Image (cartoon, rainbow, N blue to C red; front, side, top):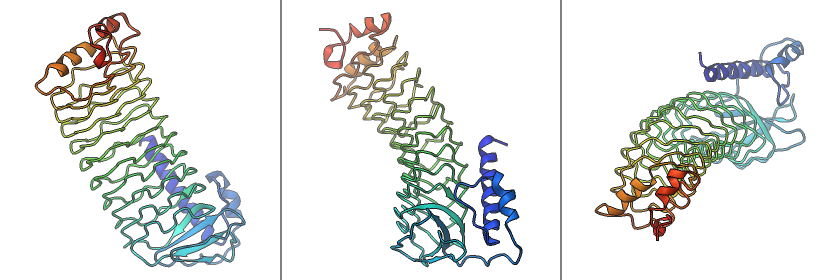
Length: 372
C-alpha cells in the first residue's frame, strides 16, 4: 500500500469517527486529531444517534463567534453546537454557493448530495477551511476552482470524480495542501492551473490524464515538488507555464508531446533541473522562455524547431549549459521557415562553462549570442 493511499484511508477513517461522535451529540473541536478520539468518545452520554442529514445538506463548522450569511440555500444553527450550521441547498447547481463565506473551518458531515452536477467555485476563497468530509460527488461534472484559495486545507478525501470533465484550478492556491488521493480522472479534459500555487505539494499520484487537452500552469509555483510521474499527455495541446518556478524539481519524464502546440515558459526558473528530455516538438509553434533561467541545465537537446515561430529567451541565462545551444541555433536559423521571434534566445546560455561559452561566441547577438 502506497503512502498516499494509506493517508487517504486514514483520513476517511478519521472523518467517519468524527461524524459518528458528532451524531452522538458531542462537539468535535476544529483541529481535532485521532489522538483526541478517546476523550471525545468518553463524553458520549448514550442515547440514539442523531438522524441523518436531509438531502443536499452539509453540516458546516465555523470559527467561534461567527454568524454566517448564506447567499444561496438556507442555514439552520445546530442547537447543541452554536458554531455548527446545517446548510441546505435544494439545487443541482452548487456553483459559487458558499464562495468566500466567512469563518468556515470544516465540513463535518453531509446528507445525500447525489444529483448535484456543478460544484465549481463552491468553496472558493474559504481561507480558513481546513477539513472536508467525503460526500457524494458522483454526478458532478464541473469542479473548476472548487477549493481555490482554501489556504488552510491540508488534505482532501477521495471524492468520486468519475463524471468530472473540468478540474481547472480546483486546488489552486491551496498553500497548505501536501498530497491528494488518486482521483478517477479519466473524463477530465481541463487541468489548467489545477495545482497552481500549491507551494507545499510534495507529490502527486499517477492520475489518468488520457483525455486532458489543457495543462497550462498545472504545476505553476509548486515549490516543494521534486518529481512528476509519467502522466499520459497524448491529448494535451497546451503546456504553457506547466512547471513555471517549480524550484525543487530535479527531473521530468519523457512526456508524449506529439500534439502540443505551445510550450511557452514551460520550465522557466526551474533552478535545479539539470536535463530536459528530447520532447517531440514537431507541432510546437511557441517555445518562448521555455527554459529561461534554468541555472542548473547542462545541455540542450536538438529539438525539432520546424514549426516554431517564437524562440524569444528560450534558453536565456542557462549559464551551466555545456553543449547544444549552437546546434539548435544552426538548425532553427537555417530551416525553411525560421522563427520570427528569437530575441535573447540564447542570452547568457553556457556563459559559465568553457564549452558553452565557446558556442555562445558563434551565435549572433541578434539571437542572444556574442558573435558580431
